Length: 79
Image (cartoon, rainbow, N blue to C red):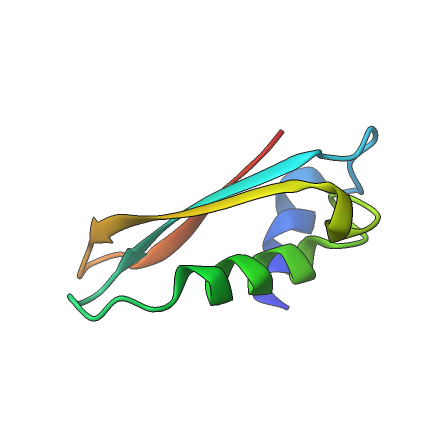
């Protein structure tokens, strides 16, 4: 739900035309890395209906960006 709210704050509406790819880079607070596929699935599910009608037709990729103890985050790029 936080992803969807952040999207709406940034764009204020659904994307038209819809995005065709989603790339994420995630930064963790510790060396313990989460599963990138789970992060990607959570993000794409949250953006479904906002950035694109269905996540089945889009390209997806997830990459670890490293460790950032002060600001762990997920950066999302839509194309």
